[in-house]
Length: 106
Image (cartoon, rainbow, N blue to C red; front, side, top):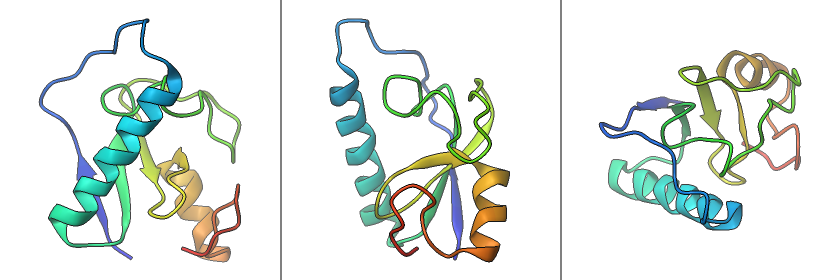
């Protein structure tokens, strides 16, 4: 299982008029483009506060229940696209090769 760090050159938050569903759809499309263009089906590492934000993912890590903060590394799982703190999901996957939320295999 490899990981790719993605740090977009332009950041910012989206306008308040966009719904969280639209933002989640954008995130899912972005992940699909990365998977297609980079030719891999791996977990993607992203920095919270740029492409990942409170409009397109949960505000806290489902494993440790601590809020995400801008600049922290997170991992997006390939099939279900659930987001976790990088160390949390890495430790989880050592013992359980499934998503802790939906139980899909990794």
